[in-house]
Image (tube, rainbow, N blue to C red; front, top):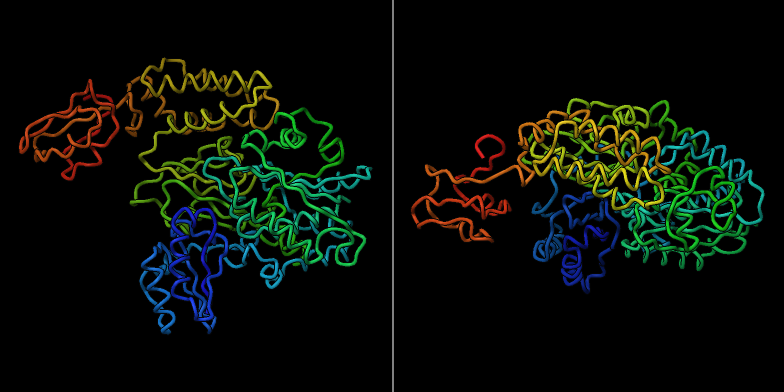
Amino acid sequence: MRFLLGYGSCGIASGANDVLSSLEEVLTGTGLCVEKVGCNGLCFAEPVVELITDDGESVIYGRLDRASAKALAEEALKGNLSDKNRLTEEELGFLKGQTRIVLSGCGKVNPESIASYMENGGYTALRKALEMGADGVISEIEKSGLRGRGGAGFPTHIKWKSARASRSEEKYIVCNADEGDPGAFMDRAVLEGDPHRVLEGMMIAGIAVGASVGIIYVRAEYPLAVKRLNLAIKEMRREGVLGENILGSDFSFDFRIMMGAGAFVCGEETALLASLGGNRGMPVTKPPFPAQKGFRGKPTNINNVETFANVPWIIENGGESFAGMGTQSSKGTKVFALAGKVKRGGLVEVPMGLTIKDIVFGICGGIKEDKCIKAVQMGGPSGGCIPENMLDTIIDYENIARTGAIMGSGGMIVMDEDTCMVDMAKFFMDFTSKESCGKCVPCRIGTTRMLEILKRICNGEGQIGDVEALVELGEGIKTGALCGLGNSAPNPVLTTVKYFRNEYDAHIVDKCCPAKKCTSLISFTIREDMCKGCSLCSKKCPVGAISGVVKSPFVIDSDKCIRCSQCLDSCKFGAIEKISGEGM
């Protein structure tokens, strides 16, 4: 019998330490132990424990705490599989609807044990790659059709060929683990849950391009990922799969870890290289490309975490097997991080070619509280909002781009009927304007001006012509900005204007927020016919804006009200209403 505890950041934040101590208390002296694994993607049910019986049956339990974990272990030791906290078949459909390559080891292997990784086939692809040689490796990557999973979707084999063709005794492989999109956690989960897979992929890339040093550029906000990477590298040296003459070959390789300060712009490869060199992370124009002149002026190949994590599987199973999944132009699988108003948020890996609706409603169960979906934000702060009537869009690089969004690194934020799309555009523009490195005028000044207009609109001070100004500014930034961050920064605004123009007009013309979210455009009132005079709303109000006599209807002083919604949330009788526009 085995107990696999999800011990990634999401599990720990949800109480995995309490579950761990409780399980260990029960299992002490039984000869059994708790195996700490990475997140298996069931983030909506954390903390999660997978119980594997002696017969090989797998049962997954979720939403555990100290008491329920203890009861689970005690029953298991008696030979009973408790139904309490057991995930339902509907919930497990989240996993059954996926095809896992990158995430295949997450939740299965112990990320702090190279033995566990090797027991699951780890480093067999490295041995095979050493036998194939550089040309053979690149040939398989070309057959696979693997494109960079960091967002741009550039063919991986072209990058590798270019770096290989560059003449230099010193070359570098760089892993871009600077995951900075709000709502994205794919790279973190892979590095925490299966770090050896990424390291093996980087080493295979080293064979392909002739590099002997791999650098992982990871944000410092990922301490658990950094810890497990360092431990993995230490174990690799001990087992002889890292260092000089690896596995008896003439191939030598080593790793370095560089922790970034969390600048979103360092996800752009030239800004990343500047940061690696000890300089401020600011992009430069290309050419020369990093494959010709990168880190320390030497040929450098840069891919992101997910791209490298695909490589061992491709080498082991063949490029044609990978190319057999996906669409004509977008091969293989893609990992998505689902967040927002979706019932079952977490990590999803599916073949390219499914629709957005397949993921949101098929795998993730639809919208919380069965509300209506309004849009899905794809591509992070530089992506775009795809409306409900376009959820049948096929997921591949070209089809997503046609909507005005981008694939990005794989974040999906689901929004329901209560989301204000103008406020959402303001949120993302606030993020990109702050994260702009400031090097070029279109991005530095343009995003600031766009944010000012959006703030004015949300504050009820919008003017006729503001929407046209936003579009003009946005198109100018897309054309004139130096790097990918600036080129794509206006996307959330441009897509919301394109698909939700009525909400902009309501804010500007009617001084109304249809979603009743923008605080300057809403007010609260108490219905006399429904108020029971319990006084709870008055007690919850932080500014004393609600007054009245117990058992008589209370009233709200709109001049004092700060629109915090605490009264609305506290009322048990539905007597408090939120109003926007006419009637305020």
